[in-house]
Length: 494
Image (cartoon, rainbow, N blue to C red; front, side, top):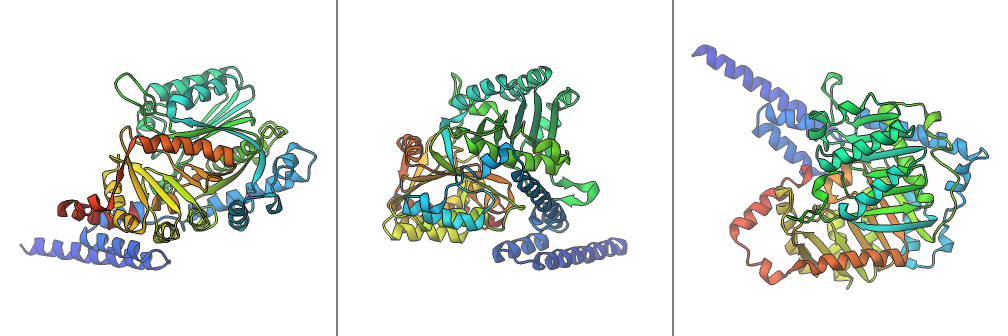
């Protein structure tokens, strides 16, 4: 009996030491008070397990790995700047297509880009683009595979999820065939998002193929005392020969394709040509360089950045956010987009648990008379996140925000359309993970015609949705409210 008591005393002492260590670590840097309190509560309430969870998920941006990424980005930016002085296509790419504030007619776009010039000066608003919106894998995959098959020099593909299914295998086999033809293929997948395919060996058999380089993005390596499971690469970009690119929310998975039995996941993806292709190319190569250390001279070359010509009149701006970008870039982008709106804000997102600043900005916009509409999934694939979203409904509905539940299939699109003149599209959800932890790619589209095409997709989703009214919402059961409020407590770590 005394031995058991002794063991319990030792375990209790170790628990107190672990709790103290985690508490001190959590308090060493400034973060949301609710997140700090929640982690301290979890570590105290769940001995040892809570500490392990904190190590894996609670330590996020300020890490040696994150600083290394920032340094790698700075090195790539310096090399790009050096190439601007050469007589190469780089001059035409980044300088000849820059749109100056005085050239923007829209008051909204001018003020938003004034903010973005300060927040992200290395990625200016570029003119000369054309963009084609694509609804889900049904429209995106055929064009993506066709572009891959027509590649002549290189193919750069990155995706958060590449599944070990028919679509994932079709993309890998198509890439393998092009590599065999002598086209250089670089494939970057997120090991967390693509964990099943990675563990089942989908990528393994292609790793020894000539001209086919495959790399899994991860910032977690227990052998090197790196446990940053949170820092995921959520980008989904495909660049072909530096001339055409695809980006947006569509992962590489069969769930995105419709069959006779079901419809594919509803999502928005985009095909683009023009200077924005070089921006997406540079984004991919920064991530690739960080993970592989492939010589910069091989990456920043005229083959990857051929001379760019103006082929359209759509103005676009790359917004790459994440731990290596300026702090708060994603939040500031969404926040400024909302507070500058004067007429209408249309938002579609699968995961809606924004921070207080964005939430208050949306409520304030509605109070100002702005038409604010929000489309969310009727049934969320992340149940807790869906319930946490619903805990916010009452405050939004009371302010005048209109909320719509999109009927199945699950909607995975991420778009904000403002005043029918501009739009934010890409991979970022309106949740804490996308705003603060993930590496995300957004694109600001400053073009009325393109914004209206997106608005048509939005209206199609409105037509397939049921509006949530304040009167009906107030009648939900006490059990439902309890579940929503319980999940909302997890918002800082969702």
